[in-house]
Image (cartoon, rainbow, N blue to C red; front, side, top):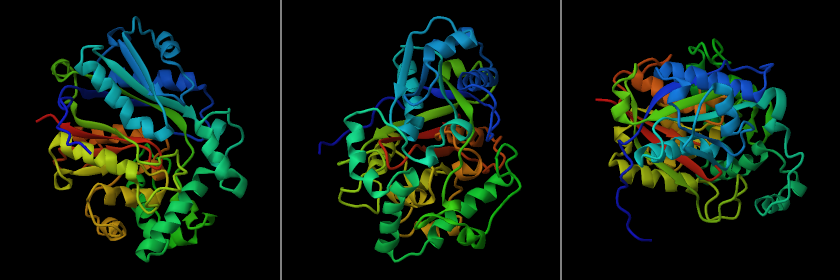
Length: 388
């Protein structure tokens, strides 16, 4: 592998606005309406208007096209629009795309968004019901006939291997669930506000797919989240201190599939996260010791542990003790386990709140925040830094 130098993206774009709908189990509104509400809130937070926007980025899975949303929001001409594939793995990559557009002058103000009725409409947890023929979908033919129909069942394979490799029990996953719900309990926007749990609660929750219990699984949520990205120069005239994009990365591992990568060398790790981690550390010049808060994608608890290890916060198999010790503030909004499941976009918003000092669970003097996107799929990550 050739040696790569630091890229030149860092510090050339920043998140200056965040906005969301309420997080619910039945929004009663279309996904277009949710997206428009979130975008309007984010622009208001940024002190900008629809007329200022000239770029938009979302997920390929989003049902609201950039052009349709621009019309609904009163946005005029667009010079940049883009979509990122692979579900939750797209979250941080939407911001990377926006930053690239801003840094190259392709666009000046870019809105990133994700909106869906995941609980009242889609129900990812109900399993694969129908899939259009595709080369990517062929891989599922090796697992669906044997009962691996849901994301939980796909993750359970890796989770079981992780426990076996490191001589652990499912209580290891409970540490992540308890930490997330502790933060959610003090976050008024969280679905589980006021409802912390204990390890005993985790152990008593019903099996979904062994070794995963109900409290190891993220929520199904209706809602929308939007982020506004522009240059640090323009940010100086806006209401909030910017969250500067210090580093951004995408990553896919060898023999990568979308959540069914059962044939690669190490099933007890997340190689795609390792790809992102190496890029972020190299391009930022930072190390794990420099990170004040981590917002790690938590669709399922085992993958939070594996991410901590891939990023080098602790050794292999040591993440359960690392989380139990509270060694690093983790998912301070409650995560997708406790706040809402918005494909990770609400986690990016929490990173911005931490840097602004407006988080419901603020970490004093937070300066560098690590954010990750979906795991088990081609993924992405960010390091955001407060404006000194």
